[in-house]
Length: 525
Image 1 (cartoon, helix red, strand yellow):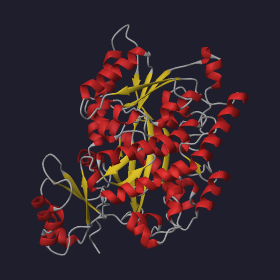
Image 2 (cartoon, rainbow, N blue to C red):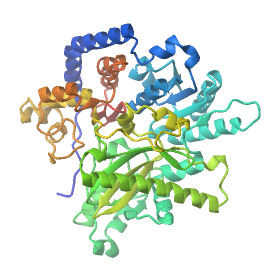
Image 3 (cartoon, one colour):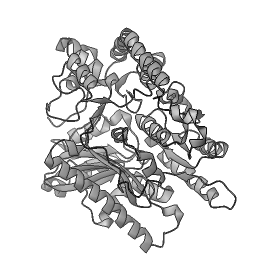
Image 4 (cartoon, one colour):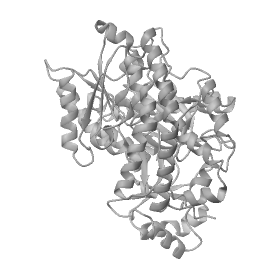
């Protein structure tokens, strides 16, 4: 079956799922509260809390770091890393998400601020970032914002860096490339052109701005002769279209036209799409942090369309470890080639610095590495660095000479997933399949994955709720939010933040198809 558009839930189904999740949150609250209070009291009394040494010895504080994008797990991970390094941590988030975000209650956070919406008020957002930099004498700004804010963050970074070039002005280093570089990497079509210019293989693709464009390409004699299949990908953020994995072309021009005419976000000049050749191979995501083109932190994970379990590929098998090493070498080589290209074009000043996040997505097919896109922002896979002793120093360029040049998770690091995601799904396996299908049209395919060996599945195929909890308790699996020295964010995530986000949808009368606990993202229908 070539058509693979997932069914969307009705408002009744979404509200029923929300009600059941709220009931689960209420039922488990006493246990979570007891565990949180126990660890909070113990770490406070014994002086082992995350922030103890910095509250007791303020003279030991170092750089002031601003982290934006508080609702995402990656922001909390980096806040904790900077706090452990002795930094003063300022956290900020957009008003729509920041009110009850769990990270603001972390011991790692010294001050929290609300920001304007970068999509609707970009100038006000940039001004707010600049104001925070001046207010707290911020020495480094690390954006962890969503894809919506990437280019606005880049523009803000350029303005802040330009001010820092002036004499007698406080210097703040933004950890994001500036607009020309950022845009080239951020926009899928521009990134693909760059990869081709630098000599890297990319899957064949075609930018289309109308149904006619797409159909003409898909059913042309040349395309049909190749025998390839293509996926339709939005060049802008398109939550409504993320559930459609139809492989084109369909059997006839009429079928293809009919299907493309029904996509939730119509193809247009304003909303262009990319028809990209479908590759048969394992997909990988990476977290890549670099300073002046040199990688300072790297990890690669197996990936899928909605990834909720992150494991370092080096721990999967010898073959996967080799793939991870190839992807790291590819990433460094890409930055080297791109830096050399900029140099040949005379673009060598600070505004073209390759400092920031360059998190590439790949597919490896028949031994060939194909790059799919570059996320110019922190990746959720940074959660695998939560125990790394010098991640912050690598980010700030202050790592000791005795440290490895590139920070990587320790060998054997347990996979990261989210109990708030995995436990409800594991409990759903206790229900009759027919009831699951009635509750949510995508529930069955989620709790009974087609590939039982997929290392990205959370909870793993066939695993009961009891076994899931046992693995977490034994440390074989780690929650991305939970930290015994900083336990409050986990409590807030499970019993405040997510109930609040779901109840907002009920109030607005909007159904949802999926949620991503790691990014606090709700996929509205």
